[in-house]
Length: 118
Length: 187
Image 1: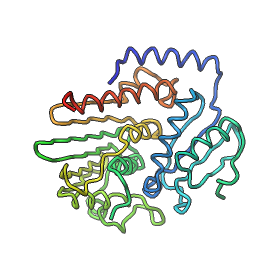
Image 2: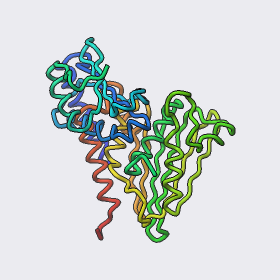
Image 3: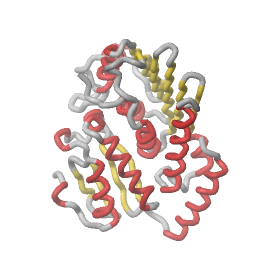
């Protein structure tokens, strides 16, 4: 593992940045990671989401995973909620779609209706 | 037949079961021994565990703890994958203590799935399982790499999440350094 002193510096920088950005999360993202979700590629979807957060330096998005979404035909399933807005469920979210959802919905605030499942 | 392309997906699926059972620590061990031609994967959780009756059913593909969903469905697939590759599978559990799932493969077996995106899979667990720590130990012949999120959490405290971009970069680099270390100097 890399050095914990290095991590201490990262922590101090992150805390400073968080102080400037203010409290609260901009958005939350939930990836359905049950057996069928993983088989459909949910792990690669989530890895792509984390890669986008890292690449774009996004600090205020909470990413969690949940079990099966009970929507096996649409997996990988990802839910996005910006602020107190509607929790939007998206289907067939591969890595490329995940990157687009970060850009359009999480950062742009615009629901991508064509990938939405209801 | 299997539903997963790589062994990391199996590990994630087994870990998911542990988290559903209330685990706060996932201990993932991977041992590659080229001399013995074995690849051993152990996923140990400190969740609620299973009694003997449930444990006996869990390797049955038609069994699930919920009636309408697929919890535990991945276990028979993991067992099948190991047994198809000249290996073995064992799951032991104790109520109140946790569950240990262990799969061994013939490393060189032609049908053995690759480990796959292990770093990406570990990141999914570390970030996605809220409040769950991951102890990852990977041994290749004599070399060992360990990553323990309890140590990282102790430094970060409560105010900086694992999903912070700089923390993600730190984790990615650590896991990458680990892979380089495990490959050894001769490769």
